[in-house]
Image 1 (tube, rainbow, N blue to C red):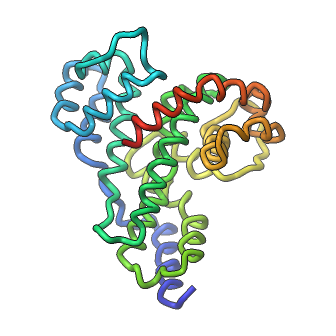
Image 2 (cartoon, helix red, strand yellow):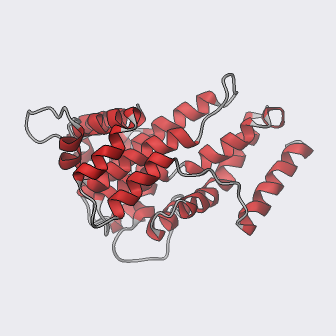
Image 3 (spheres, rainbow, N blue to C red):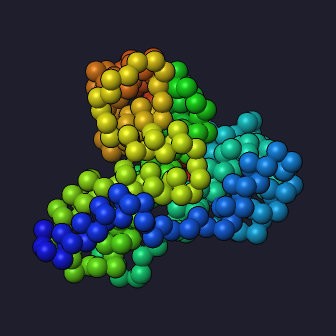
Length: 280
């Protein structure tokens, strides 16, 4: 790594340690959705008004509501309020987060990292969709919606780092340097962003610990266990499920490799539809 690139990494580490990141703001529409969902006095109509004001978010919600994973019967949803009623308030928040991640991290045309950005968006959709299925079919201590939310947010550290690196393209002509930077820093950066966006601590911690394969812990599976397995499956493909029987995280989910493979095979089309809804 060149001296300027090393200085970039050193500064990143200093900012992380001091909590002095120039963090991206949570997009306004997504923030309004988040506040509305958290307000006990809000209702479907008030949430629908917010979503209707952002066509891209409304379209994403409609795709989610009509996906195989969310569909109830043959009837297709054609209006926002019915879509909210079908998927539930927490899932509406997830739609807003997937929209927010796209809005908060953008690169200028011609950036050398555009391909990385697009691949990362697709990967995040896969991790989120697989996380939801894992949580619904295991002994995960939280809710499936929470698992999907963590999956949507798990790579925001990589988004942030790539955005910063895009401002200094001459420093990172070496692909290995970029990959090392992402591997070393993305979990800590992601936690800082998730905390600044005021998401639950359980999600922030789970994202920070998502790559820890070995943990001295017993009991119910948490967010980090879900993310660890979902990441493996999203990268290698769900066909490798039968080879994951030795993972402690899988044992904490009270699943074995055979059950995991069966669940993923049964829900493969559902997962793909949700990936398309979240990544589109």
